[in-house]
Amino acid sequence: MNTPEQHLPARDADAPLCAGAHADPLVRAPAHRHAHGVSSAADRRYLTWALLLLGAFMIAEVIVAIVSGSLALLSDAGHMLSDVGAIAVALGAMRLAARPASGAWTFGWKRAEILSAAGNGITLLVVAGIIAVEAVRRLIRPPEVHGSAVLVVALIGIAINLLVAWLLARANRSSLNVEGAYQHIITDLYGFIATLVAGVVMLVTGWTRADSLASLVVVALMLHAGWRLLRDSGRVLLEGAPPGTSPEEIRAHLLQVEHVHDVHDLHVWTVTSDLPTLSAHVVVDDSCFSDGHAPRLLDEVQACLRGHFDVEHSTFQLEPASHAAHEDGVHGLG
Image (cartoon, rainbow, N blue to C red; front, top):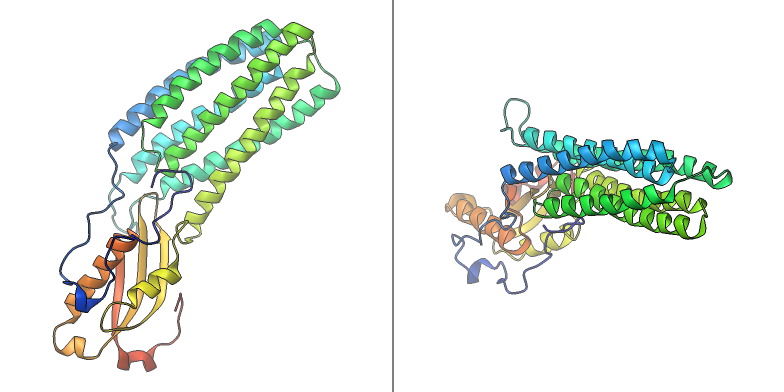
């Protein structure tokens, strides 16, 4: 998965149909395609450098904002504080997610990364609300602002954020956790550009309300990024099917496998970034359990799922057709 709104391909157009009569059920599908070339250790290194750079610059920006009286700089510093917090939480979530499954935690702590992304989204929305209230107040009663200080700090801020964005872009952005930190930085970068424009306007025209308007631009960007993070993390936490994945199409595709009569109790969800998961009850010919074909059929169904829908982690319950009368009810698709 490669974008903020990551999704699984609905169908590999070049893959053969899952018909048992035309394919060797023991032939495995291609290897898991969610792997990427960036190690978790490299991700942590990139985020650590980003954390140090942002932390140092944030302290300097707060000092200049107080001296110059600029809300735009102070709002950027507030946003940068949320950036520092986001990266710190992302680093902590990475360490938790790396813990192996044990005891009651059968999936390990992998969803710590999703909780981190949700926390980043909430932080963006809260900080945006605080800045918006102050920006409106200053639009009504604009204070004295030193445009030269705003301009210089904005230029340095753009350079710092470009460097940090470059670092995070080298990390694994298919992780919603890393993507959350990256969105913080990109939003901050655009905010500094708006602040730079405000600084130029104040120097040329003396119109200090430009400082508050720049703050409102930052607010709009933060609201947009925060909503996207909450939407994507919420979909994972509520165990919705990954974006672009159609459970109906998966069911129809599995029904093409020879000896399969029905597929029900089908569930598709995401444990964490890069870990789509599926479970289903598959009704097959009664003879599959007497002639030893059931294990081969299970291999074929799992290979079909990996090859066409890129779902590596699946659990199937094979049921004889005569068992239908014993089903208490369907709790999923089908």
